[in-house]
Length: 350
Image (cartoon, rainbow, N blue to C red; front, side, top):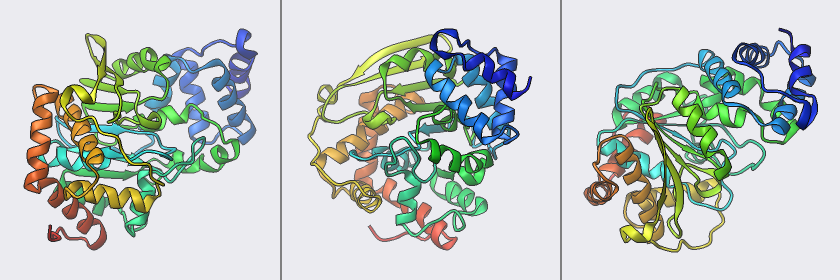
């Protein structure tokens, strides 16, 4: 099936368009991700899917094709993939970065991934924070990234270096300036073959479809979070809707920080990459505003529970607080940073 035939099916308008079947979606994904379709055809497909809305079948096909074009390194049977928005944050702290080192200190391998900012939000991303640390994709070589993960428990993947189709399609996505199917697919490359995932969504209307997709992708257990700015991080000043997904189905739950004694109101801040880094370090050393510390603890606790490291969120909170007090996450962070910067894992003083 060629791209013209595909566009005739998905581009007939909201009422006339139809979902592609799995084989058709595979063909579309291969043509687009391998840049065998023209830029005009790719842009037309993205816009048509945006109007029609992607089906689970189409998303599954795109995920499977993009995974086959990426570098993926298994990291064991208990790892967690954190799938946040590649278009970043504008008005909220990213507690998942600090929480990753809490999990690592608890023995859970964590994989984080992203790119420099993308549309439609154009917010601060994890890669922007790495740039603020003096790291870039040339410095963050695959070998050094793997060494940092081995020493710290946290793998941070520059997605465009590990998944060339994302790099090759960046210019076109920037020109469009809109959300496309790739905004969903890029978060599911699963660079570490992780059995567990925490996945952020912006609208609660996509909970069911996302749950079906994660079941199709055979995760052992997933947590879908309607988090801050569409992220995988629950709020600390109000309840957050989440779905817990496993092979048996999906269950809605509301995470209320007040129920765990953690509710706090974060201060209003201008969130630059430098500020995200500064607050992350302050959380890990116990010197941040209590709201940001609590948010890292709560998000860490949910992740510990999803991966089976904690039997309950309450136990996860206890583990997280104990680890932060003992300095283990801060030590893991410094091992990770020093390996990426200097190729060794010497510890900075706490």
